[in-house]
Amino acid sequence: APVLMLRRHKSGALTLAGCGTATGPDAHRIVLKRAVLTGLPFKVRKRKAVVRFMFFDPADIRYFKPIELWTKMGRRGHIRESLGTHGYMKCIFDAYIDHSDTVCLSLYKRVFPPFPDHPADQRLLPAPAADKPAS
Image (cartoon, rainbow, N blue to C red; front, side, top):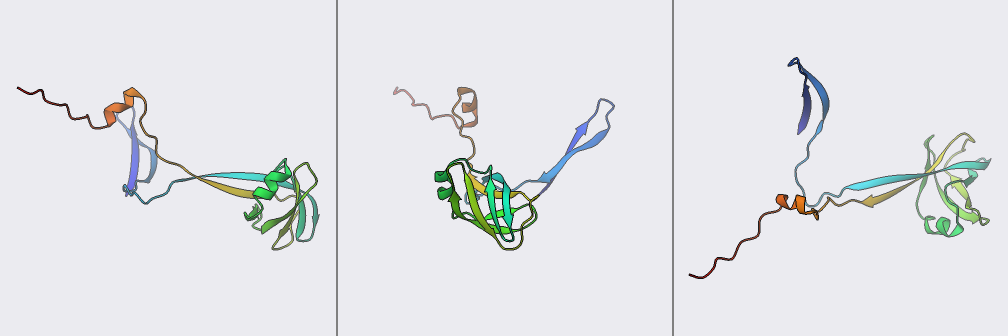
């Protein structure tokens, strides 16, 4: 459902403060947080490039090897192998890559809504049923 947020000024005038949408509660909805790792092409030869500054350890390169790479210019590619011990890697792309391009790798993490663990937040939870003393 569309939502408009209005702000009332001291003069009584209303101005638009924000707009967006509100979604219904759905237990099957998954909320993801996205992080993007970026690197720079160090050497470029047609579709192949040596990328640096994305990783600093060959073990990390081996771990993230199955994930697809993308560039700011719209090229898609993947990691071929690690190069040396300083985090350089050989990559191959679907078309020619430019020296001024940026190589990116997207990482996703599932995010859960916060659970109230502070006593001040306990007012949001239903009160426990009190036991009645026997008369």
